[in-house]
Image (cartoon, rainbow, N blue to C red; front, side, top):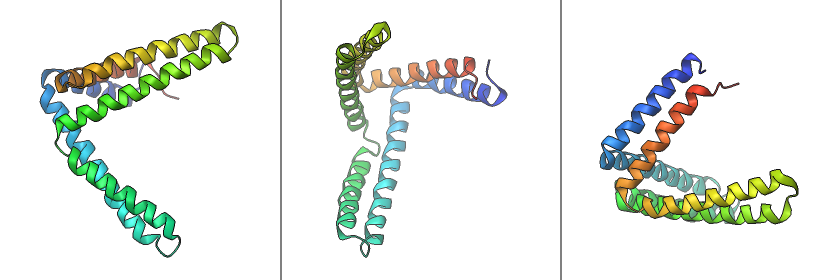
Length: 164
């Protein structure tokens, strides 16, 4: 069972999951705003780092500058844009699903024993699940449903897992 600190996190995760399911567009919009602000702040920090590294290394400074400009543009585009966020999440799910399938196939051929074959099979199944979820994440309503279900499952799991 969970300790006192985790019970609050359990309840909060379950409540947020239910709110994400009940108010799907508002919840996806909120997550989009938070992600946009976070990436924008990261881009600004990288731009500042590019000027700080100019005396140390010109190559590092230019790399920080390019990454900072790119991150600032992505953060500004993502800020409040639900469709762009859904697109990025879907692409991310497709990439993760493909990588899980490839690693599962590699595990099937390289690992010996039942545990290796089981982990390879589970990797392939998880990759297929991710690709199926990616096809639903294009729609912001389904994305909110996925986020809500994940928060509820995470809240229930937090209740039964005791941290060390």
